[in-house]
Amino acid sequence: MKPQFKTSFKILLLVVSIGLFAISCNKSKQKFEKPFQEVEKDTISKTPKEKVEPPLVINYKIDSLNTSVKLDSFKKKYSEAQQKVIYAINRIEAKKVRNGKSLVVPDTLFSDIFNYSPFPKKLDLLKDIPKTVLISQRVQGFALYENGNLIKWGPVSSGKRSTPTPNGLHYGNYKAREKVSTVDDSWLLPYYFNFMNFEGVGVHQYALPGYPASHACVRLYMDDANFIYNWAKQWELTANGRQVHKNGTPFMVYGEYDYTSPEPWFKLAENSTCNDISESEMKTLKEYKLAYDEDEKNIRDFNEKKEEDLLAMNLN
Image (cartoon, rainbow, N blue to C red; front, side, top):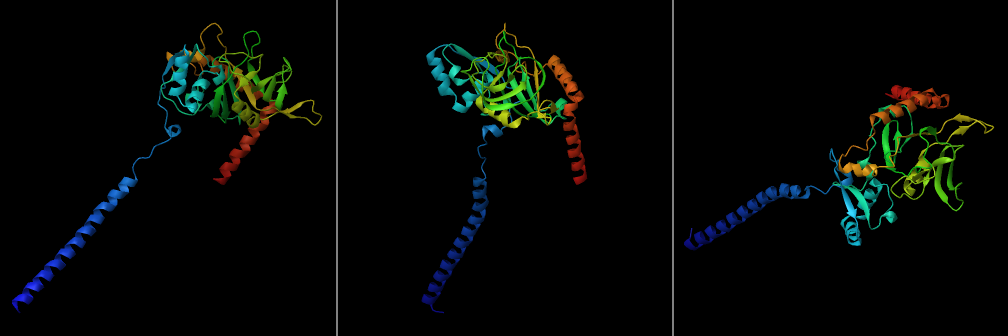
């Protein structure tokens, strides 16, 4: 082989070798980079606050809005959704929050008040009742249960000292999308749901000032009144409309509001569980449940529940 040809052949062989090595390195690089890119795509996404499990204990502090500057600072610090939660915890409407007002504020803020419920998420005492409304006068709150499972709670304003809301086991009777007050015909009561027929006492939307202020009825936020209006069941009357054939949803009103002490939610700053159902209140609820069980107009609920359970067993 001629020297010139040998030299050209060596150069060609060297170029081919370099090319093959580059291709091999590129494939190796691709093999290495591919899983790296997948890991990059699978980085942790932001989880909505509502989906995060609340801490075991939520602590509270009292925020005094005693000047217009502090009030403006409060509104800038918290989002509209967070303010709504804070107002609900304080049983008040936004328009009632003015200079000089103090509010209790949780150290962890979610956009859903469900996480701040003074009512247990599960109440076995009510598991045999399809739907139950609890109204605590002591802490000015309502809770809705379906077979013992809490589905919703919210603030209320029950009767003031001179016209208190009667405690007891009551039942949903009739409802009206809008009712004229019997106290003052200029007062319109949206989403009215009566639970004491002869006394004219029920739940409905009206102003929540942050304390018991009604003429015996139970005031609610508009959204809550609308929800209960559509969720709770009315009574069923006999054909002549003169007797109750089946009771409506039970409304269990209990607890005593202390008109001489600071609002009970302010006490959360000292004890985060002080608004929970007490032993004496639980005893009262057990008495209501016993009375519910003994009322023949509720027996249908138990029969329906038994039929559902039997049907579920047969399907399984």
